[in-house]
Image (cartoon, rainbow, N blue to C red; front, side, top):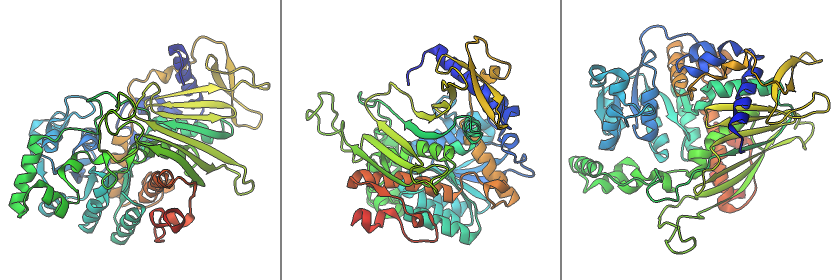
Length: 519
C-alpha cells in the first residue's frame, strides 16, 4: 500500500492516539523505544539472583542477532558453538553494525574473551555441565537434533523459528521437554514485540470492527547478482577448519564429516542451507512463518481451517531459458509463493460463513512494498510495517463520519461503553498521539530472552495467563504446522484442511505423512 509521507505520519499518530485508550498506554512510548523494558511491560519482575548460565549454539546470521540482543542482566553467556570458523569469529567481532555488534562490543573485550568457543554443540555440553539453558540458531534441519541433545543433557531450550524441519520433530521435542520437566521456547519474537502487542490490544478492544481479511507479505529483490544473502560463497577458512576437524575425528574430509556425523549433506548445503529442501523449509519457513505467526496473534491464536496456494521456481533456473535476467542456480526451494488461508471468525462455531481470509505472498524479484501485515477491519485498517511502525486509519461511516488515509482519528467511549473511533480534519496530533515520536522500536528479541531466563529462575511452566512463556513449544509447533502444510499444499497443488490431531503433541498424526495429502 503506497502512502505519502504525510499519510504515514498521520497513520502513526492515529495508532498511538488509539493505543492511549488501552490498558498498556502507560508504556506505549517507553517500552517500544527502549529494549529491556519487557519486564515492566509484560508483567514479569526483573531477575532476582544470578543471571542464567547460557550456551549459544549457532552464531550465523540469526545467532549473531541474538548474541547482540541478549540481556546480560538475565543471561551469562558461558560458551558459543558453531561448526564454521568464520561464525565463531563473528560471534566475538560481529558485522560492525548495531544489528550484529559482536560480543566484544556488547560486553567489553575482557568479558567477551572469557567466553569459550566450540565447533560442535556436543563439545560445548560436555565441557560445561554448569550451563542451565541454551539458545539454538542452527540451520533448520538440525533444530530438533540439537534441541533434543540439549534437553537430554538437562538444559532448558530456546530454539529459533521455524521450530523444526517436520511436525514429527516438533512433537518429539515437546514430549521430551515435558518428560524432562524443562522449558522449551520458540523464537517467534513478535510475541514479545511491544508494537504488536499494542496493535493486538486495539483489535481485542474492537476498534477495527469485524476482521475478514489480512494481507501479509515479504517481498524482496534478489534478481541482481550478488544480492542474495542466502547464496554466500564458501569461505576458505570454513573449509579448512572442517577439513581439519574431519581428519581429527577420522573422516576423509569436511563433506564426509558433515554427511556421516553432523547431519548435513555437504559443506555447500551447510552454508547455503536455506536453498535446499532437505536442509531448509523455503520461503514459508524462513519468511512466511513470521507473518503467519502475526496473523495468528491478531486472530486470537486460533487454528486455521484450510490453506491452498501456488509456489514455483519462477526466476532461478538455467540461465538463458526464460527471462534474459534469469540466473543459473541449483536451488530447490520456490522463489515465488502465494498462499491463501481460511481462519475461523469469532462466531464460526455457530455460523460456518464466519471466516477470515489471510493471504501471504513472498517474491524474489521485486521489493517495492516492504514486509509486514495489513489488517482490514469493518471500522479501521491497521498496517504493520517491517516490525518498526504501525499505522491506523478509520473507515468512513454514515454513523461516525469521515475516514481514510488523510483523516486524523480520535477515540471516544461508544454508547456500549467500548471505545469507538471518530475522525476529523484536525492538522495537529493530540498529546497522546505525540508519543509516536519514539525512535527505534525493539523487535522483541531481548524481551523473549529476558522472559525465558525469568521463567527458568522462577520455575514457571504455566500458561501465558499465569506468566508463562508467550511462545512455548506448543505455539511454535502451531506456527510450524501452518508453514510446513503450506509447502505441502503448493507441492501437491491441493486445498488442505487442517486436522485437530496435528496440533496435539501426544498424537502421532502429522501432515507430512497424512495419506489424504501425500497418498
